[in-house]
Image (cartoon, rainbow, N blue to C red):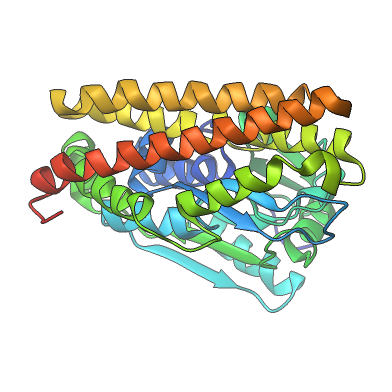
Length: 349
């Protein structure tokens, strides 16, 4: 399977969401220690996305609280002045050779994979928008870092990784995609805190503009309101509602979200932003987003407790009402954020 290669000085960095964990490991090995919430915030990661169900009536739409795969990494690296390189190999053998070459050059390699083929992963469903950080290949085994939930640093057969990388099944597959970061700007490694302070408000401004604006039926708060309206009827429109409804709740809580459908991560970003910047104007937004996070948790509790019948129907109606209220609260919060963010970033609202 090729010559062995493992990064001798690599230190795994743990995280709760797959792409930000992968990015954190790439940046840390390159010389910049940046927290996962900060990367999520600088990457403008929060959103709500609605993707039509592959089998309407038997499955729900894909409903996720973040922006699209790889876009978060691109945004964060652009904010930090880091060159992020992405490529897709034409086949599994070329992908393995390209990864080995990057390891030999001292890079941690980020890659998209289908979780179905990862030996250590508990899910038996195809989901191809998962990210892991590769730091070693030895001819039969691969050494990677996944999320805390999946055990962090893991070793798996190279054949398992090959299948996971090459898969074209599941949600938004990108077979044999990999990425790495070029050597970091000197200022980012020498004065990381100053760079982060400079980039906090511009990232907040871009996020607030997108979240406060209209993005159509698939993205943003309009998509959340669309999903809320449909959830109220799931008892009647889904063939296997018990398992499917509970699955959405588990997905929003556990599936690489860091809790509360990514709202916990964004709250942690705002909290760290307040600490780093010393800007008290962030205080009400930290508090308000904590309240939003708690409301997401309450909605998730209702989904995971769903048991069908008339009580379940009433429960889904309550979830729908909660999600509509959440959409209104997030709309208000991001609209209010526009004013201080524009002022701090030196731009018009």
